[in-house]
Amino acid sequence: MRLIIISGRSGSGKSTALNQLEDEGFYCIDNLPASLLPALVKKTSGEEFELFSGTAVCIDARNAWKDLRDFGAILASLPSSVQTQVLFLNAQEVTLLQRFGETRRRHPLSTQSIPLAEAIDKERKLLEPISTTASLVLDTSQMTIYELRDAIKQRLLGTTSGSMSLLVQSFGFKRGIPADADLVFDVRMLPNPHWVKELRLKTGLDAEVQEFMDTQPMTGEFYSDLRHYLDQWLPHYAQGNRSYMNISLGCTGGQHRSVYLANRLYTHYRQQYPDIHVRHRELQ
Image (cartoon, rainbow, N blue to C red; front, top):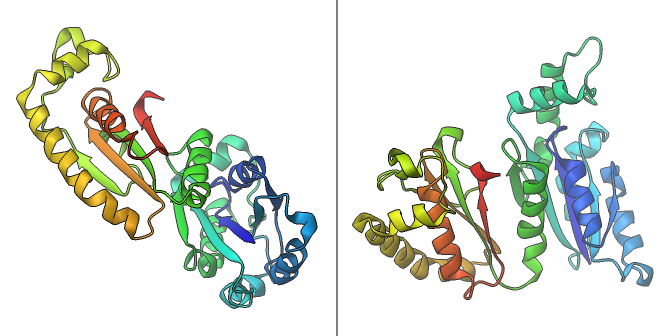
């Protein structure tokens, strides 16, 4: 059977992740006491659960501290036939503070004597036994709900396809490097359409910008080198049991050069890698 354990800091998107897995056919349980994992595995291994894609549970700081402390031992006690993955969702503290401020929800560890910032830090320490054993850690600080759902599908559910899933992403350095990027390429040295008055308000999705980039000798040289590097090394990543790769290309604002190149790579690799996606972070 397949077991996915979702954990993470409050406000990082655990409910979104669990809901996505439920939509994908998993039997899902929220706020399961970690000590009940062995019993749950035994129960869901029966024939009546064969119609589900697997079992997904959320285990977080609402657990007893002793169960959190013993999380590694509890995992080790599960049968070897269980394919277990632990997903830990994280986010920067300033982002968590902002999210709780916007939703006006109470943090599960905050009280009249424990303010929000202190509760967030306390939760981080309580969850260390889980975060250190996680097979996948995602920082959701800059992710929308839809991007998180896509990441769950690609990074967790894509592992069953037997082939590596690719995400080609454009971004702007002004907003920072994507936290989940595996390979990052800086394309800011290429000629910038932003300085062409007629192209400033357009993007790399527009034909006029694409024609401008096509006519720049440096563009062709860089793209050729980049494609040669990926052609040579992506198969080695796949042979190393990598199920997912995030290839991120960044320019200054994420509007022109990175968008253009991300689309070119996507077009080139979509025949070789059927499970490939393209995302333009700053255009969403």
